[in-house]
Image (cartoon, rainbow over all chains, first blue to last red; front, side, top):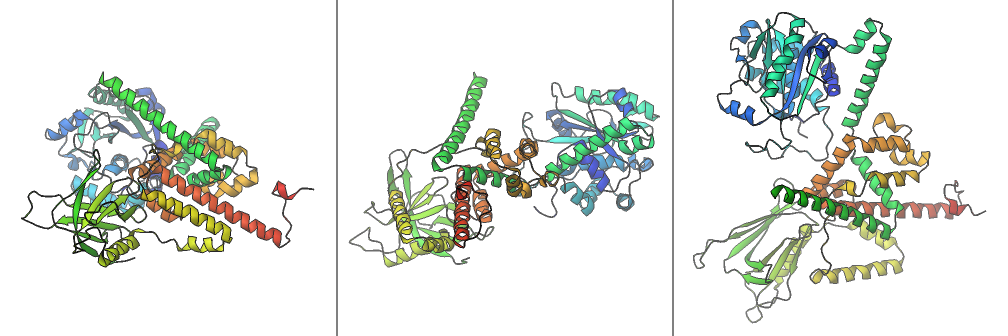
Length: 320
Length: 302
């Protein structure tokens, strides 16, 4: 895997929570939002921002080609005067990480960013959004932390051909991440593929943010017709620390369990299974004589044959 | 690794799969074999037509990548009107025929010249994986066994000369078709805790590595991460772009072609080798009169 590359990582609350922690952002974690309503947001208060994950579809490409206009809301070209931080997305694989950072770098009044990111922020102040994106993708710390979450692979997939431009919607190809946050008395959308931050409704308090954000997101979702592949992540404070401060033992237990699950999943995610696959195959092979081994190979062959036939039948069925 | 470039004159022979007819093309051409720029262990093979105005029509150039162990370059003896050689890819079965165009024997068109033999030898040196280790091992074996294996080898080679008689089999498409939960469970059932630890501890994620049980191993195997990794491996092998070769190199078995089949055959070879080694070291221990620690029931007759 090349040193300078960014690998694909899973978009999972556990991954991003560990990621922001490792980038030294303090007292921040990411929680999955299961429904888009004000109550769910309020329960997670304080919510610094929300990451919206969706399948990049035909309509997004149409708007992108039509002067890269926003699907909803209006461009705010004077964002820099309002000290809104905005970085363009320069690498596909890092889009989630970049979306999270876009939100958090706007929240230095609520969140302790840590030395590394604070330095980064003052370094890029005054840059245009593209240069900031470029600088972000060149940051060794951000990249190495990001990459530490990718599944190890024996075969580097750097040379994979890029999907064609008119990539089929049904194909599980590109997912895109955008951030929503409260800034300068408005709900802003930060989409690294757009030219500027996008201004939505006026919003004067955190409570108003919880009330109005679901509407903004519903508007967005309504543009995608019957597409159902969405996911929402809330960027919040560290809920375990909060529970400890409040001496809420039930909550401490729940949060500890959540962190335990994250830890286990991240461990499984990082593990290289090549050795285990080889060991299992080898040891199973040792249990069997030539005849039995051949039988096992043949049964695997016929399983493949069966699924091939099923695929064929399915394809035929669709054509009829 | 050889850095040398082999270059000789040859024409192309068109092969029609339906009629089995071979038609030599009159174009003059050159074959160049040289180490690949991207991957020094592989070789670029190109056939280019010389610009030749005596023959009508253009012939496309052949550009092939030779992976040692995956290709053979052989004289087609049945062709008597010229010296035709076949370049065959073992993993894909693709075949390319060429006729040698350096001056030969005018009376006997199919007579292979000294120079031809030299060329063929040079190419075969490049595309054969050296098996020094194995030869040494074979010498250690009892003479009878060695003889027998030689015979088997010879028979095997004879078969190769003729067109393959076996009906081709559908390749295995995924490792999981063989390595399914049922098979794994059955295998793990046979092992005691010590054996589980000895065999699997080093291959498991850290938190389950210290005292692996059947259920912790099954949990890992059932996880999406394991399955994804297994699917990626199967896909790399199916793509046939050298993943099988790289695996053979890193796991140290003799390359058996791309695809899941080749990989599994390699694993089988490794398993057998390890078993042989275990047996011979066991035999040695018994010879030296050492007490067997009772792991093996057969040794404990009384």
